[in-house]
Image (tube, rainbow, N blue to C red; front, side, top):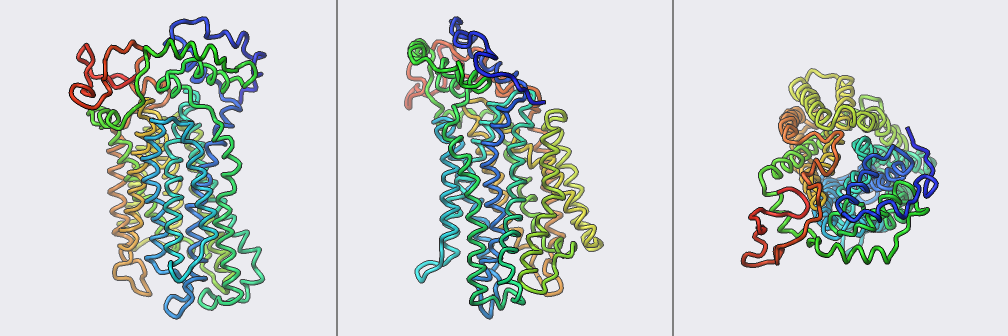
Length: 573
């Protein structure tokens, strides 16, 4: 239920003096974070979901649109006797894998930089990279010096870095701003924008195809699309790809102006005054919640005796090398890895499903392209989108761990049926199993592997933990596309183009079973404060009596305080 409370002083009496009379910075921190954690669901949460979710909408659009765009690229650039308007498999795979490869770099690098420099400083940069690279792809062409494949791969790697950076930033920013009661659903709603992005990509392709119906309808097949037809298709794929950058423009301003999360400002920057004001401003609006620069300067001077350096690479490595923390990271990262192996691998059977639904009718090029886009629309609406939003509405009631383990278990059964009973399955059976798999991917580990890493690690290393988990997941996607896609075609004939698909499905069943086991290592985060989940101290600000603790040589950086206990900032060792 949305909370339509008044904002500013009308809603919050004596706003400027709410916390200033409290001398203890730890108490001010607790009170300010309680404002965020206990806030009823309101329009500020909706705004947060839209601003962060637009990035995922753009990501998913760009990733999905290329699957449809490569069909058009084949018609334009591979119009010869050998390929007959179809892009070669190696070029197709390289273009699709390029984004995932770039995403691995973006997830890890942006994840750490968001912990070191701040969420706000990095947020928006990744969206600018995505928008720029998307526009560049739509304008690139072939020359005697470089092929179209090489140019597109280059820009898709760059775009992938931006896409990867969006994962830890959007997840952690949303989690740190969300109320405890609704945090899982709020983060899941951001991730659910992926489904809408996939839907938009298929819908945009369909609109473009219909718009050029008169030029496409007289052409019998891709193999004879030359001259005016080839020029038309060349325009079409550029429009489809370029549109992916449009939604990002609407969110870019809000991302660049979003305040730093109060948790980062409190725990890393030690700017108590600004964090307190930002927490109230987020909840109640700008009216009456303005930063007093004099008070801020005085408070910064008082906090100098507490302040610790920003998280370094060595601190991150020390933290995640500890057994308890390593187990949690192993659970989140390998759950995501096993998930993406099968999630991306399941797309191998989409051509058979389109045939099942009657979308393989190809009397001319127009019907061919239209049926492909329409079939993808149906598949997305049937399984993926309902699964995403089922997670949104149930994750804070059922719990992340329950949904993730149940999803992996059900997917294990589905892939066992696909793998061991493949020969006896009709196309209708295959369609039903595919839709069920898509539903339980998204009402299951595809959503929860995104949510949990944003919750269970401390503020100082939270984005890094999420970035590592997401990066290993994308590595699984690369393996699925590079190794398993060719594997299903071993010994292929005209009558049986995918003779090994049943064996690959059996392997995916094994991965889903392993996903159940790795999920057991991940703690349940439903209803718990982020500080409790990350093992952070209630009293963050303690006088620092450790000269040169964060230095480089000798005893410096050894991790010992005067009491002999290892210290890693604000969380418990």
